[in-house]
Amino acid sequence: MDKRAAMDVWERIAATYGPARPRPWPHVLAFLEQLPVGALVLDLGAGAGRHARAARVLALDAVAFDSARALLRQGGGDRVQADVCALPVRDAWADAALLVAVLGTMPARADRVQALREAGRVLKPGAPLLVLAWMRGQPKHAAALRGEGPWRAIGSEDVEAPWAQGDDVVCRRYHLCSVEELGEDLAAAGFTSEKVEPVALAGKAPDNVLAVARARAAAPTLL
Image (cartoon, rainbow, N blue to C red; front, side, top):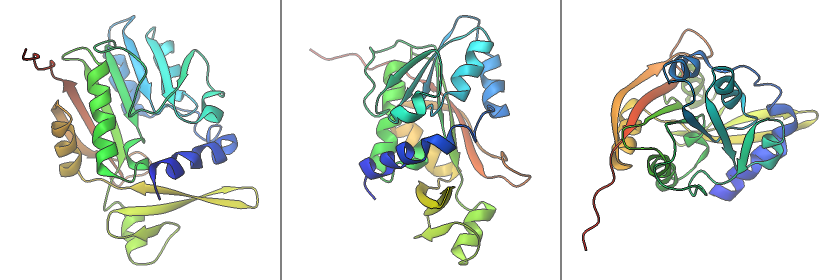
């Protein structure tokens, strides 16, 4: 599956996916609560904008970006339809950014690193980025590797996760990352990681990798 096909899936399932994800993740709220009032937060790959909404409740300025117009329409506030690998905003603009459940939707590592690079470009030097990504080796992945459970393993690092929409079942492809891989990708994109660790979101067992990293200052141009 190429990047365009992977992105189109979200237009197809938007009508049921957005309403099924109304509440922000606690780890994201904890990150947002540490930011000063009025800080500009970019929710990259925002979907229906649940985390951008949470930011506004905390008196933060938030802009939601997503490639799926049908998901963005479900949100409020400032919204921009855009590919997170090519954001239509100036350098060093934002005070913080989120990439929640986004990197795994990109089949190619080059695209995942580019999404991180774009986040680094639009963040002010030293500004924080929060990343949450589905984790390799989590219980559902382990079951898929055995040929069990709802997910279907694609090699050792990717899965197809079904999404039921009426009589239709749409398969979402995800790349599952490890702690080491996400740390390496952040470094390749020019970030300094403060923490990269497994966390549990949907149950007691770790199922996501969480990272908090800071954008480095851009290297001076040599004339």
